[in-house]
Length: 483
Image 1 (cartoon, rainbow, N blue to C red):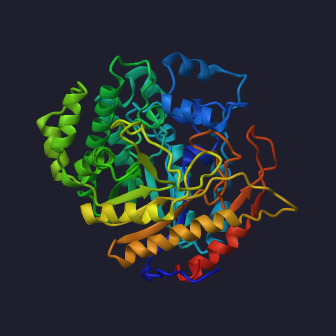
Image 2 (cartoon, rainbow, N blue to C red; image 1 turned 60 degrees about the vertical axis):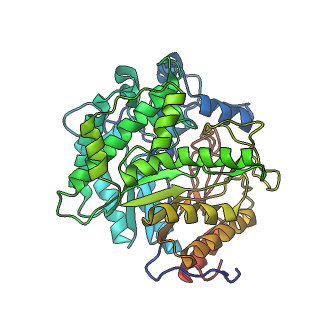
């Protein structure tokens, strides 16, 4: 442990961690659940990390989705997760042992409304989440609940064409209302949609759109995310009618970039790229479509179906707080990149993990500062973590690399608070090992707690405390003054 140079955390700061139902729960056919988007992603054995992540960005064809639904030859890790559906009580007790003040997880839409279009919810699912939330509260852990974390029912893709179809807005609104009514007495903090800006990085998981379902795929993506923002505003509007003290937030993955050099062309491209990342939060916090985005749509022949009623809804129901995930920083080079979210350049000044994710603690300070300066809305760090191959030796994992990464990033969170940013929570990603979202690998581990499972689901499932478990416990007990 060392002293934090920027130990500026308020006394009521929420220290904790985050997972997703789609990566942890398992139990994919129990209690009435039907398949969601994550359940049709196979583990691609023998492929490199680079190849796997490239396929993730490309998405899947409709035929691939249909084939995977009935496939019996491949292993589908997210259908099994770490069995959190059955082990949540003991797992939450381990998190409480570290001193967690908060825990972010998601509720699986495909459990509550298995097809997405039902009129009545699945009571068995609601009872399960009652137990999970009650367990958190009993341990003194404040829940942060995500309504949708890549768990759109697969039926929405197959029967409705994904989130591009405006019918999905009302389906999701119905789902959101059920969650607020059922759990609003115990859950204050809600994130409506996980990483709402990932439409070009994880298009299938984000929007439920297959890459061959529409001729103009970028237009379909922006129409789909518009529909998600409208659905979010509807849920925000409904939350204001309830007697509970509710905070409804939106979430983005940090996709902002540095210019590769001080050449004006690089600086301007970085500015344009960053504006199209701020587009999502500009709409959800400022309540209107910015002119730069409308110009981008014109240049790219994108025509969206946006009604006057929807514009009014967005303007009158902006979000309460911002949740951000941050793992690494990116750059753009005007000689190699264009103004698209998936067109970036590797920073030669930074080291990276085996998946090519650059380690840049100051990038988190940079991101938090810019988002705070732009909106002055409370910020939740919804994800921050270090994926790495861990080595288990005699029941122990010596993960100094994770301690170093997280300690340096937590220090930069304190630095942003010292400069005025109202950061209220820090959720380390994957405090217990879970299936990787981007690669379907169990071996890409983030946790303070080791789970004895491999990429193909073999292992005891036993939980073991890593060195970082005890380190993070000390971070929390000192309120971030030691890292």
